[in-house]
Image (cartoon, rainbow, N blue to C red; front, side, top):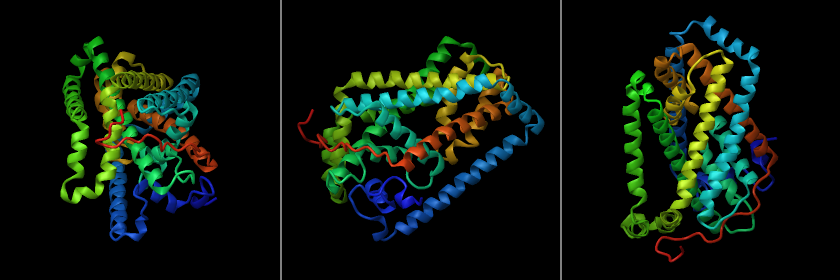
Length: 378
C-alpha cells in the first residue's frame, strides 16, 4: 500500500499538504519557493541526525560496551518491570486524550476519549518516524478536524484545522506547565536532591521564567491583539487566520478551571513518566530513588523536546547521564534507561502507524462555533 492511499481513499499526499500545511487551501507545489523550503527542511533534519550521532558517540566513548550489554541483558531476567514500563504509556495516552478533551470542552466541543487517543497515537507516529514531513501536533489537529471529509467546504475545513492547531498548542503549553510543577514539587519534597545537583535550582528558575513569560503573553487582551495584527499592512491578508487563532485562545481567559484541570492532568502524565523511568531502571538492575527521578526526569523530558536532535536521541541520553550522575546513575545505566524509553515510544508509534494505515479517520469535523477575534462569542 503506497502513501497515497495510506489512510483512506479520499486522502492522499496532496490533500494532506492542503489540509495540514496550507490551511488556506493552496497547494504548496504550485507556489514558488516551496522547493527551497523543502531543501532547507531536508538539510535541517540531516543536521539534527548528525547532531544525534555526535552526541551518542561522545557519550558511548565513556561507556564500556560490556557494561551496557550487561544492563540490557538484566532486563530480560527482570521482564515484569519491563512489562510495567511498556504498559504505563498506554495510561499516558488516555490521560493526554482526557487533557485534550478538557481543553476542547472549554469551547463547547465534545469528542470521545477513544477518538482523541487515536489522534494522539497517530501524532506519535508522525513525530517518531516522519519528523521531517509534518509535525505530529499538526497531524492530530487535522485528524480531529476530519481532514478530507466532504461534509465541510475547504474554507470551513481549513479554518477548523487552524482552530484545532491553536487548541493543541495550548495543550502542549499545559504539558510544559505540568513538567515544571512536578519537578518543582519533587525538589521541594526532597531538598537533598538540590544539594546533590545544585544546577537543578537554576534549571527550575529558567523553566519558571519561561512559563511566566508565556503566561504574560497569554493574558494579553487577545481580542485587541488580534485586531491590531489584522489591520497592519502586509499582515492584513492574515486577518481570518489571526482571528481564528486569537478566537480560540481568548476563550481560555474565561475558562481558568479548564486550564487548572489540564495542568493537574499534565502533572499526572509526569507521574506516569517518572514511574516508567523507575520501572526501566529497576528492570536493568539500577537502584535509584524514585524521588530523585521525580526531580530529574521532568527536566530531562523538557530538554529532550529542544529540536536540535531527531526525537531527542542523544540529547536525552546525555541529559540523563549528566543529571543522574550525582544520584548514582552511571552513564551506561542512563543509556540503557533512555534506550528502553525510546523503544517503548517506538512501540506506541507503530500502533499509531497501524491506525494511520487502517484509515480510521474521524468522521465528525469540528467546524461549528469557531470564534473570531473581535466577535462576541464567549
